[in-house]
Image 1 (spheres, one colour):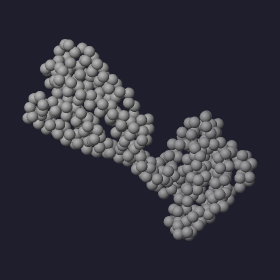
Image 2: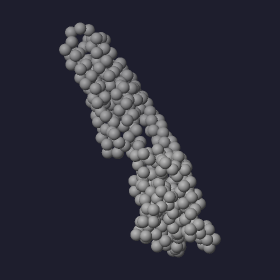
Image 3: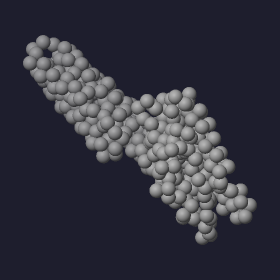
Image 4: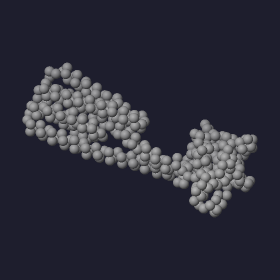
Length: 385
């Protein structure tokens, strides 16, 4: 993939990656906090003393079920935006159901349980509100609703049953939580975006280190790694190599200029992509006017495809800047990895490079195969041409 196309593709993925990461982190943080609610319910009943065993079991079981729901919600298997949004909504639905249930429970505890149970419920309401402000700050609106769910019922009770001044203090505390949540949200988004930018920058550097800047084809580093992997799998899949050189490329540079020469290289690279676009094909610029193709094919098929490319390149001139054209031909060496002949990928490369040399010496604009594939080439090349 050319570098510009790679950059555009990464830009398109950025928002989806951010959303997928947010969904994953929201799920992880929600799972951690879910089981504190049944503990808080149990402690509230303990503080209220005996006499509410059935209510304690029902309420505790309900909050345990909500905590288990947080665990049951799965993160999407892919970074698809729709799947991530769906997963995020499910997580926040359970979180909001839990905070609303706690708000209802705190009102019930204040009305039905003796002291100090209402005070315990009040303290837990403050703790849960602050926990949301700090740990579930990824989305502002759901976080505000969650904080309001646990804090506003207590505010109403304090206003009605204690004193407006105490309720005012609770309101200030709630406002402080909202400010903390807002700041935590900003810090979270900054960190999330920074981490994604760093990942993209790392991927971009990795991509840049493996492609040719002019043509967008793979470079020698990627070529060497791909050839080595192909040789390792040679027992299961055939691997072949083409090495080609543009004939008399210096004449193009000397007569038309280096700008035209660069355009010629880009045009050859584009033609390579068109001809070698099968799964398992890797087009490479090895340097200068020399190109290569690693493919999952036997030697006969590789030579046939190389001959087809050579014939098409000879038949259709390449476009040049300002409407010009250049008639270009290539000399090609081809061969397949043979464990009995080649110790490794370097040995195959030397063998195919020698075949390329023979193609040049033999008159250029031709395909020359290593000995293992020579008979196949002679049998098929005239028909392909």
